Image 1 (cartoon, rainbow over the protein chains, first blue to last red):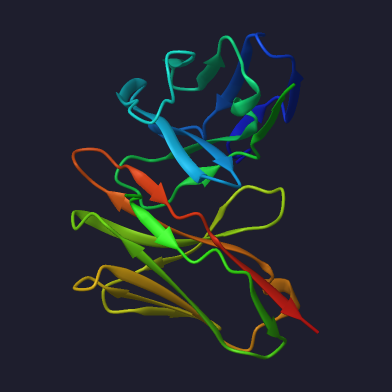
Image 2 (cartoon, rainbow over the protein chains, first blue to last red; image 1 turned 60 degrees about the vertical axis):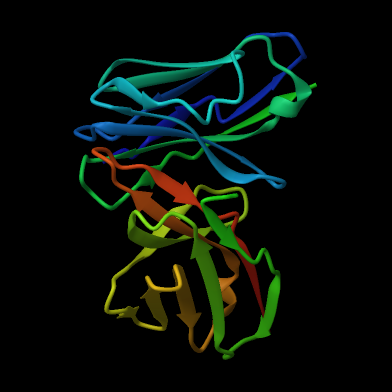
Length: 113
Length: 111
């Protein structure tokens, strides 16, 4: 199993630019989670999907952030426009509904200059 | 208030020492509990689940106290390779799984 695949691994961009992060969950998993990790705030849950449907986006910081899951094998997290305070590691994770195990991707290190 | 809170550490211990971490959670509806390990610049990986009766996996022992709403992780005979950040997580199941993580406790095991 390839595990959860995220791209890109690193993204450096300038303030005001649009950033798109991508995630492919483990095949067969029907829950997908986007987390953001910073030294100050730790690992924050941004949004999660179940069967491709967004269930709870209360963790999304503001309207500049949006997430989609057009099918069971792909999700995107978009930031438009990006700001320096968005700099963080963004993790995608997936699980099989009802399972206690959450599997993480390798993360995207985002730097907004 | 954060859903899950941990002492950030760092805990600096010599090889062979026993070290314990605690983690408190605020939502009494939390149903499942876990410890994850995160190495520097890597993703969190599941270390072990925490069951009501307590459970052990080699040198690692996890315990749950529902009355006081905390979970603990005990590491015996610590190794250099145990150096990492340990995150506790809770799963609040209201129709769907929702995982919350603590900020992590950093452990440094010294020779």
